[in-house]
Image (cartoon, rainbow, N blue to C red; front, top):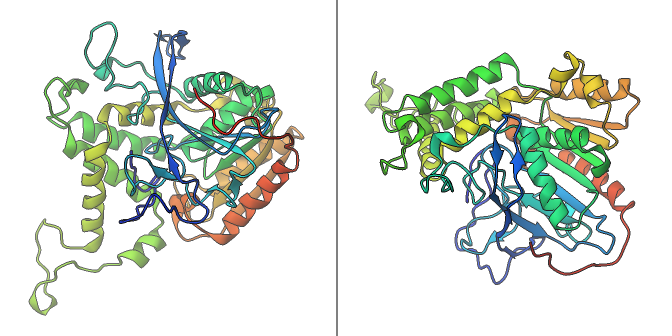
Length: 410
């Protein structure tokens, strides 16, 4: 269940899973929770039954007060940390953040990763079999919202015996889910950690998503979303969608430093080819990322999740007043942004901070001067990690209780 860029876990060729690196939670196994209670969706549809893939790290204390839910971004999954049991090269996408002695310290916290409904990494989604037809859902899978994911995640917490989460955190789309938790289930969240996120997409962001969706939908192999029956995949469309998205995750400075205008195979004497093949290093990189993505991600899932991104706007019900929308929240907030993130720029995080302060709600804000663009939330910037470590030490001081059990089973 690998992912890339805005969700890419590290890959360590030749890693011996019997001797995991220092600070790792070690080998982890995916667990599956089956839910047979109907889930009413914002679209008006109902899922009568569904399954969610999860991973947990650390130990839930006796009071069930040390649980941290980590919500994933567009391309990621429940595999947040550690080494996948079925693939020693598959390291969790936020492994640098979560583990023993890391900013989210699993010696202190019980950390939960959940693969969202509609995703393609184990939870019920478009590629799953519909109980009504006996065939993959395909394009018939109901439209989802961030709020739908939160309601499903809450059922996982219920199943684990967790009434109140010490923190809900996430970057990008994961940050939107954390905000939604704080607003819709305020009594169940002590701390809301929102990283490189936004209270709503700009028109430009919606436009990027639409270009990516059109690339998929117009691929001849898409077949109206029912490509499973044709035993094919709209790889070209998925590849282009990934290339478009990937450009938005990196800053101009980062791309210039990595690639510049370097030609991959310049002609003799440095003359231009004047052709349409792969010539510049940045072209080679984007094609590689796109082709890799098309081999493991589901096209219908991409359509669903980007639409959920578009729809997210908690202030829609308050006539655009974000302060009113955030007013129900009881959590303390930590917001982190990055100076070169032009997808979700710092001004969007500051907008959330201003709304919280208008309500006299608790808000801590850090703006990190980092060159890596939106992807910075996944990287090892020392200032960023120092902020996260300090904040979770603050949370840890409020968590008490002895170990409840060494492993929580669904």
